[in-house]
Amino acid sequence: MTVVLVHGAPETSAVWEPLVSELALLGHSEVVRLSPPGFGAPVPEDFGATADDYRSWLIDQLSAFDEPVDLVGHDWGGLHVLGVAMTRPDLMRSWVSDAVGAFEPDYEWHSIAQVWLTPGEGERSAAEIFAGTVEERTARVASWGILPPAAAGVAAGQGEEMARAMLALYRSVPQPFLAEIGRNIPAAAERPGLAVIAGADDVVGSLEQRQRGSKRAGARTEVLEGLGHWWMLEDPALGARVLSAFWKSL
Image (tube, rainbow, N blue to C red; front, side, top):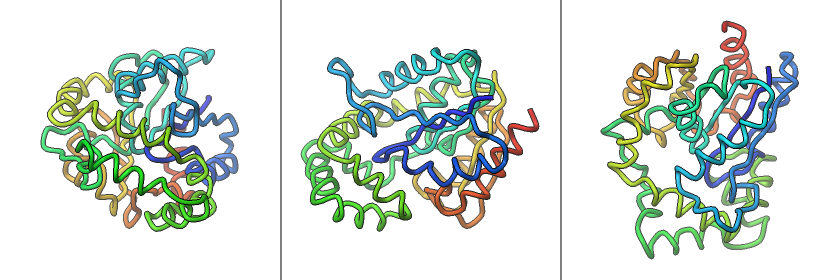
């Protein structure tokens, strides 16, 4: 089966590199990394960069495959994956997301996202985040927890285009709109799902919210104790084993 990986914001597909290598060692050689527009791929002229636009983009991308895929999403990529799982399950054999908690009614955007949602403050924050040389951005990205050499790959893809896409994306789903989308999450149970829960990740919801979201989506759960938001970089071998075991169980 083809494995499709979708990353989040403000990232590029560089965050998947170590995991792809580990998956290959386990026999998963057909792995495709899809870069959302603005996050490692050009933004089409008529692309609004809203959550709906990214869901449509991912549906178009998956429709080009000859058969349903095993779909994996991280951060915003995890939300894009769930958006498709709720509306076009025929495009996938299975789905994996580490962001199921973000659709819970009591989820609140993390503190940095709250800044990005605020006109003026968000623009100033984005300008600061993406300022400087590639080397300076690499150091900044590494301070977030994106480990080398992925930090350099992420920093190289950052700039004004990513900033605009990031702000538009977050501002398209302030609460309660995110929770409204999440009301349909039980539809994701149409295909086998796995919720990856990184124990030390405080960005995509509490442990309880993620477990609750997983249950509503009819998904299995896998708790990665001690790992943070970029679990696929912190322990790619463990991440690959978890994913491989899930796929082999289907």
